[in-house]
Image 1 (tube, rainbow, N blue to C red):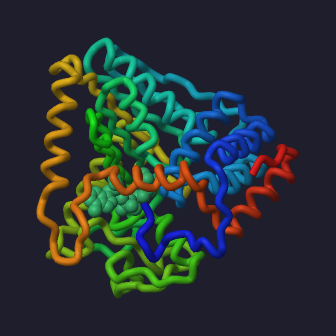
Image 2: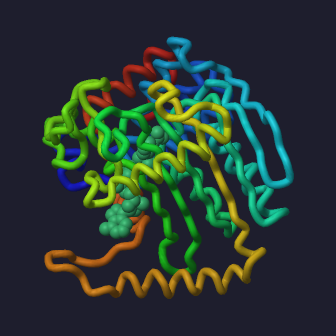
Length: 359
Ligand SMILES: NC(=O)c1ccc[n+]([C@@H]2O[C@H](COP(=O)([O-])OP(=O)(O)OC[C@H]3O[C@@H](n4cnc5c(N)ncnc54)[C@H](O)[C@@H]3O)[C@@H](O)[C@H]2O)c1
């Protein structure tokens, strides 16, 4: 969910209905030869991010993914392959195509295994960007399961006490169903922020807060750099030694081990920019206790947290997933705000590949 200073400015944006965006994205992918199902999965994942206010990982990414397909950097059609499998585990290859379909299939396999054996795990190698990781964890909610998804990424983040980027922003998503309350959906980079927020600040021409990134000598940056390189690095969650940078750093390595080392696809400083090796896990709640009782306790826990007295100046205490749920309500009613330049780029790429324009 966007911080206030990163909100898409309405005076330079077009509001478009989620359904039209979904149709547009799928049509563009199909026009460049993506099989129907993979085009649909990717369109659903990108639209879900846009509806949830995670604009950096939403529908406008169709432009760069399509350019990668046209340039041959993304294989199309790709071959998603199960390399090895057991009752509870699966290792897949994404076939160096669009990342979203393989991550989706990996989660589906994990859920099918969990339905039978209580838990299912998958790792996926040879992959490209999978976008908003919550999308995969949330697939478990419809099956009354707990879902978890992670991905590593190319080097962008310094280790604690270091000054060169060695780790990806390596996000973790965890989704657990509630009953009457909104489901718990934590989706967080293990760096202070996802790289997309630094890029968005540059596009909007606004400074970034101290603590998000440092320059080559470790000095805090407040201007988003134009490109990646050794001249800067993002901070791990915690930023400084005193504030716990070693914990964000440790979590990023944990993600890298589950996604990159376990799959054999490679760890962050080994894989190139734009690549994602990923991991998914599903837990079948009913194998532990009745689902209704689980959800009732989730509701109680969430209400207790919502009822916490606020710190000075705060309106209310939230639970992970609340800000995104609020965005969904707004965007269902009013459409998704798309920055004018991104809207124009989506129309242009549709025309270039011969897809009908729906937006
Ligand atoms: N594919 C990739 O390579 C990649 C890499 C990094 C990040 N990402 C994605 O980038 C997106 C943004 O990541 P981010 O770390 O900048 O997210 P963020 O900081 O915007 O949000 C992190 C989490 O905090 C929760 N949250 C926000 N305010 C809260 C509050 N007051 N109380 C309780 N919870 C609150 C949100 O619901 C969310 O679950 C995510 O969707 C992530 O999956 C993808």
